[in-house]
Image (cartoon, rainbow, N blue to C red; front, side, top):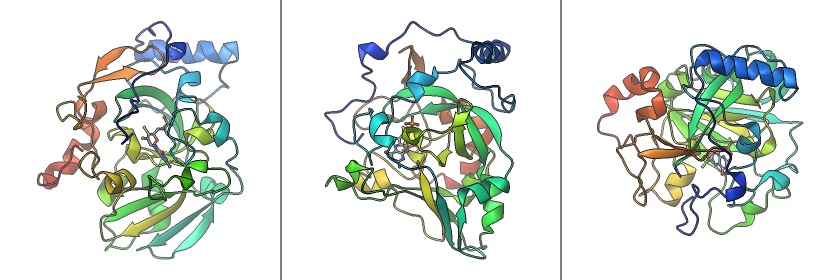
Length: 304
Ligand code: MTE
């Protein structure tokens, strides 16, 4: 992502398919139903109707085979290597400024939360985008379980470091672990979603299984994968890409078509699969949920 030689929007010809039809919500649901009947997707509960993606789903084969996961490699083709990352047993350390720091098993955590499906748009800073059905639970539920102290201002996510499964951890270019973070009010907002599934199945390792986050109003790099540690802090963390190149990647990283990356425009995005180019929207189309969060942060560099 930070290396000039690689350009994420250059999707190989083999991955290009005819333009997907733009589906309205009814059409989209009909499409999901039809796929279920055809056996491509298991029967699933209807997605939360509060989050209408406004465009058709990306085909599963594209969303699960074109990935950014630098702990494996920096090529987008991580699927084969990622299968070596064991998904169970899996624990998450909850720590920092909370009532009782502790480690929680993922299956125990899942018993304490209410899961649902949400269809979200995803916009990578490299300008590719997808629309996928995630399964998971709101980050707000996790906050309740963690019981942060009043002094906690930020939530910090850390990704697993499995030196055997992840050859990228040996790369001298990066500073591991992959760290991401949110202000605590952002974390409590309705859109912030802990992901455990994708297309009605457990989220595969290449997409960040068994637990990742989805923050659809921010550039995709904020959505840390394979989370093993969640810490509550008073001080803003230095996040992975920010630490590598703060001129290009910031902490807030809210999507904004009018604020270009120093090396390319952010005005448009290319849909995975169809390769169609569409205009990018402020907050990736989620302004109604999150624009208010930043009213008091005008002095911050909110858009990169
Ligand atoms: N999380 C970890 N641990 N490592 C990564 O390299 N890449 C980020 C984000 N989360 C990344 C990560 C980037 S740049 C993007 S765009 C999304 O994951 C990609 O998610 P996807 O592969 O499910 O599309």
